[in-house]
Image (cartoon, rainbow, N blue to C red; front, side):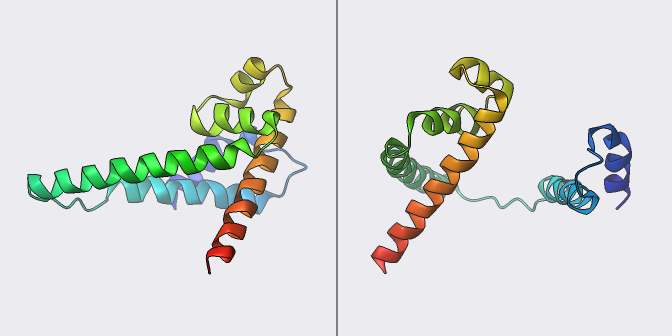
Length: 131
């Protein structure tokens, strides 16, 4: 609670008076909770053989996930695909992504939002088809 209140106090300049206050505070509280959970996470140790088996499974799962993601991303318009790639996959800031793509920052934000929404709809549709 204290860390959340300190965060609200130190970041009060980032609050826009036209925006709702409660979601802004809840978002900070959620981030503080996640930070706390990361710091206090219980760590399990395993024998080396088990860790190697897990690593091998993770590599094959990651390769499959990567190809699935590329297939889904190829169905998006180029603006949305590039915006998602820059911001969500490469981890660039919205300003950096806007500079690289030649779009405004607002256009990048909208493209990321619409692209992710379209991807989620396709994934849900695929899950319904599998059932």
